[in-house]
Image (cartoon, rainbow, N blue to C red; front, side, top):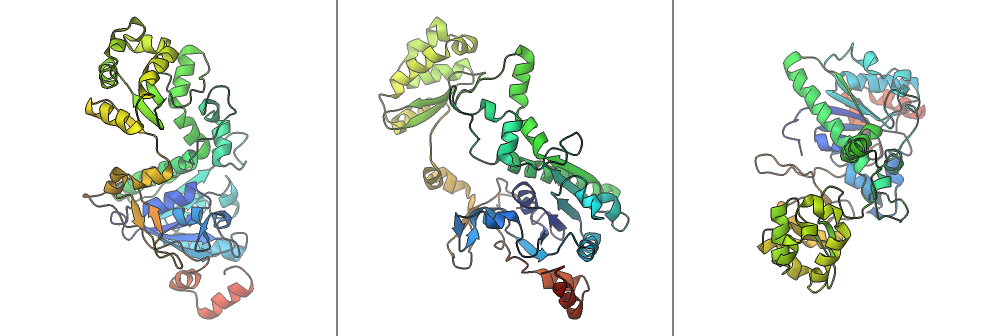
Length: 394
């Protein structure tokens, strides 16, 4: 985590679902998560699956945070958030464009009392254009940006990429923008407003397919595990599973042929260079798979790696977690939960000075820190009681 780097940094988190929570969890600072009284982040209801009665999705994205329940639709609630923002270093929200501003929580409303505030807005379709106010989710954006059109196998129905790459990618871009703004603030003393959207993230992931289309005016085709610009670069059947083999250049192709005991293929005019191999992709696949089918996945991988050829077994989640290399890098860390003391979670893919950050405290109970945070803001017990009676806080 970035907890050591951003020690003392306070983040006000007005996000829910995946993109925003992943961003604020990544920052590793003191994160105050503002949630709806009574229900909280929508992700709390994403179950099953669950662990210790809590949605696994919520657990994965909301550790190391404090939960404060405030009704953003009430004037009193909006004033409380504005007061919290006055003492924050970063504010992140995923409200629809114009919604924060309508509540008096826009950048222009908060900056006069906190000119050092880094203000990050996360939206679905961006902040301009005819669709700017529409909601959006990861698979919706995979369909909209064309990612589904290039995913899966030719002839099959469109397929969603099996991980939330647009949501989590947007969280990454937002994190990078926030860190850049904090770096700038360190020299100028002033905060700034930054923005990220699911649409723009999806478009950025389509950079290479778009480049190919603009150059050829041919729509990219679905290629399963293969890639248009290289061959072989795909999965092959083995005697007991599948193996991925990748040749990004002629030298590596020669090593693959040597490892699979078919050196003659490297001299075959159909496969003599990358352009030829791409033009005879199906014949190349059949020729190599005739060799891989005769051997187990483990034998194929051992021979290919010994020859210095890039390859991999195809793992399921359980096989991946059990692999010695995955265990060696230490991404999976302990996150004990009430009722699930052995629970583990995936950490962040970064380390500092050779040390991976701690997973942090488990996700907060809904509204579990309301009194603590608002008391520190200066509210007295009788004020909190009155706000609870009015259902402004919980």
